[in-house]
Amino acid sequence: MAKELKSLTKRAENYSQWYNDLVVKADLAEQSAVRGCMVIKPYGYAIWEKMQRQLDDMFKETGHVNAYFPLLIPKSFLSKEADHVEGFAKECAVVTHYRLKNDPNGKGVVVDPEAKLEEELIIRPTSETIIWNTYKNWIQSYRDLPILCNQWANVFRWEMRTRMFLRTAEFLWQEGHTAHATKEEALEEATKMLNIYADFAERYMAVPVIKGVKSANERFAGALETFTIEAMMQDGKALQSGTSHFLGQNFAKAFDVKFINKNNELEYVWATSWGVSTRLMGALIMTHSDDNGLVLPPHLAPIQVVIIPIYKNDEQLNTINEKITPILNKFKSMGISVKYDNADNKRPGFKFADYELKGVPVRLAIGARDIENGTIEIMRRDTLEKETISLDGIEERVANLLEEIQQNIFDKALKHRSSKTIMVDTYDEFKEKIEEGGFILAHWDGTTETEEKIKEETKATIRCIPLEGDKTPGKCMVTGKPSAQRVIFARNY
Image 1 (cartoon, rainbow, N blue to C red):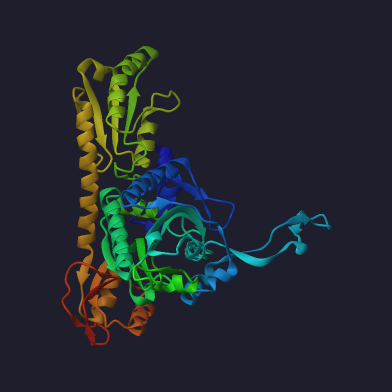
Image 2: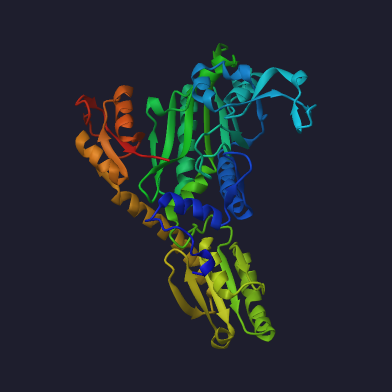
């Protein structure tokens, strides 16, 4: 790689620093002037946009519609659902005043004490409360149900320890909030959205995930059940990559949202909420990337193919331009995002290294000799393999290669997860193996006390109770008490 890019820390030396370096050097994001908040740069935002567009299509295919609800939530709303307020109270940012004025001592501006709000407002950490207060006005009868709303928004949680994309005070996400006439419909919705998230993660992000249920201790605040998809990063740590919550009637009762059912009886509405965030960017980076930079799945890469001309003079460049133009047009007609970088501002070697750092899946290079021979050099980012091939049929060859790369990086991630997933039966073995990282399948007696003991002594948490796989009962590795099935433990981000 070019000298300018050699400062990327190696994963084996310091995985955490490698991640931070890569986020900045690949032009994904940078720290902002606001503590704990980041600036998502155009290239990083382009990846998020592709995620957003695909997810939005998947939501709409299942009948969901987009809406938007206020950023500011009356403080009294949060106190209406006890578990909810307890879960978010420590992370809430509070707006107390609405005006500034010049400091009479000439030290800039100060809060105007006369502009104190009658009721303080919370910058949304999540929107269940403001949305269910709204749904009360929308729902009177079973004919008004279901309501299948989603919103794309930002939220704010006052995180003390932050890392770009993985955990920031402000982040972008989507949050679905649905209302149903029956418990069965709401549960079906919660599991449907879990499956959509898993499908997106695996088919588009090329990230293998395990679908499961959170323990009571790890549930979303105010939920009766939290479904999750869990992914494993290259360092063996888990990353919660999407959650779907069955809220029961908790928020309907808190905000008195009732409807007249088909039997002409008044009852409370059943609810779900579900969301994924820009944390998915962190999953994408840490699952696939290497010491040379990003490795992006073609289905989400802003630039799927880059073409770089190699020339000595304008005459050669013009000849290459003429040859490449119909190829560019064919790529675009096939729905392949392509960039032809013929700008005379950087050497080809720097361009090669830069696009490698940014994870462009396929690189094509063509020079004057290639024009004479009817050839072109092709390199795939996932394996860094290069070869010289015929220009004839290059478009179909690249289209097939993009799908091959997509599958290959998924298979590689799946193989990695499999190699770092083990079963243990004793607590001593667990404490030894957790130091090596990865997912550990072990029996647990189902109590919060045992779960907290394991967390305190090993820093490992129950990532989920898997929905699929071995359901054989056994004995808890800690207490020896009966266990319904093995659960997944890991250290996590």
